[in-house]
Image 1 (tube, rainbow, N blue to C red):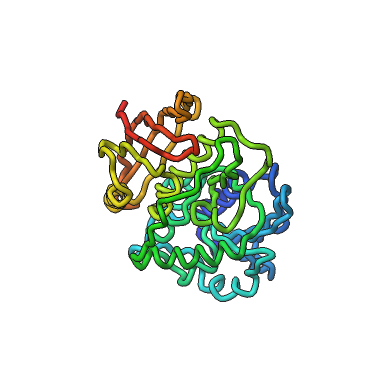
Image 2 (cartoon, helix red, strand yellow; image 1 turned 135 degrees about the horizontal axis):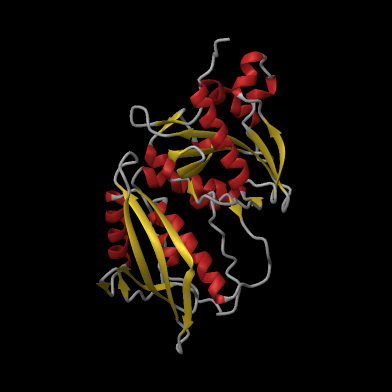
Length: 337
C-alpha cells in the first residue's frame, strides 16, 4: 500500500519528540498528561485531540502544567524557520492560558535525536508562523532537564517589553550601581537550564529545588552557567547583572567601563551570533582569596559560527576569572589550549 506521508520526515519528528520528552521533560520530573497521536496514525483515522500540542506535562515538583509542541528543522527556508503549521497557528490561541501555557520546543541544526540548538519559545511570541534564526535563538536553552516552578505574570509582561526593545535596537542599560549584599545571604540564583527557558524564559519562571543556601562553588557554577546561557542566546542586556562595579580586566581590556564591555560583547555576538559552551565541570576550580574575592578557572569547548548553516569554529579554552565577595565578575580572560 502506498504511504501518504513522508516517512523520513515522520521519523525525524518522532526522534525529536523522544528527545524532548526524555531529555528536556523527563519522567523523573514530569508527568505526561497528554501525547498527540502521530501523523501515521492520523492518516488512517484522524484523532480530534491531535489539534492540541504534542505534549502536556505536569511538574512533579510544583504541579504546574504546560503544553509543548515539538518541532525540528535541519535548515531554514527562505532565511526563516517554520515553527508552526497554519492549523496550529489558528487553533493554539484557544488552548494557551496561564494555567497551562503553550511553548514550542524547537530543535534546529544537527540531527533530530540530538540537535545543535534547542529553543523553548512561548506561543505568544510566535507572532508569525515563520521566525528568523536570530529570534529563535533568543529563546535558546541548554540540552538538559527544564525545571519549572511558578509562573510570574509580572515578569512575563516585563520581559515582553524588554524583548521588544532588544529587537528594535533600543536596549536600556540598567544602573551599574547596586546594594552590596552580605556574603552569606542566599542570592536565590535562577537556574538557566533551558531553562530555561532559558534565558528569556528564566524571567517567566522562578527555578528552585532547595531553600538551603548554596556553597560558594555551587553558587558560582550556577552563575557561570547562567552567564554562558545568556551570552549564547545573545542577551547582551543581561550582562550588567553579572558584573562587579569595579571590573579590572575584560578579555585583555584594562579597567574597562561598562559601555566598553558592552561594546566588546555586542561586536563579538554580532560577528558570531550562533554559539554554544560545553563546560568541563570536573575542571571547575574555586579558590577564595584573602580579600574575600574568588579565583575561578575552568575548561570549556566553545563553538561559534556566523550563520546557522556554517560549520562551527571550535575552540578548546581555559577561562581564568575573578569574582568579588558578592559573586560579581571582576576579571575574565581566556587561554587557548
